[in-house]
Image (cartoon, rainbow, N blue to C red; front, side, top):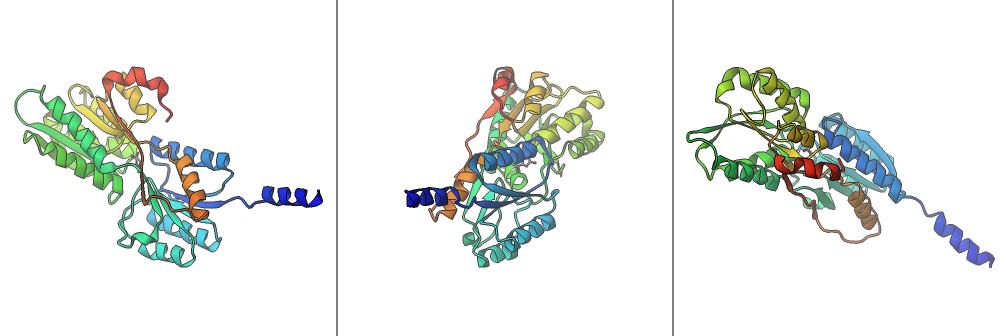
Length: 308
Ligand code: GYE
């Protein structure tokens, strides 16, 4: 009997998995929902989470990863702020035999053995979805050029590079669609507003469409459009990506025309994969999030179902 208890007790005493997570920052509604998802899922899964916020700086992420290596965590996960420049620190993790999981954003490392898997959205497809919405809408617009301004995400980040590429590739099907200005707003409301103000100052009357790489920049830009005496959603069509609650509110107010969904709720999947990796199971190299598109017409109906 004593032995039986002993076995049970040691099973309970199993050490919880220690996960070091380096987050990009807190730049958007998407990001805060992503952080909440990871923290909640860690608690649910009994994972000990060491969480570091990099304030959108790669050097801070490198420091955090090095400190996770020094602390000998079981698994490291991070959402790389930009795509390039990770080889050295990833090699350090590999040398320390700590598996690395990428979440949300990709790296451009040529050696794919430097990470186990990448969990996140297909950003090129998101850009294409935004483009397809506009191609359809363009059919109902007056003859002549349709001038587009673009607010890009963080320079060098996977979502900015891919959302730009997918959109450009798609709208190329209609030569009337012209991107007249394209600049980064770093995924924040404040910068989205600031850059849109500059666009409006130089090209105000010419602008027919705004394509923003995330909802927060679109929301900032909407404010700039209103302050310039124009109607967002009407005088200037507004397209964005993420599908956060703020975007649904803007759609219900008639100020945003469409948002392409990008789910930040990656926490549960990350915990599951971290456990599988630690148990020595093989996991797919790429785990893609499933998403849809929400035009303003369905916003009121969908709003109560939104989880972020
Ligand atoms: O779209 C944006 C955030 O990497 C997918 O980062 C993420 C992007 C998201 O700041 O709002």
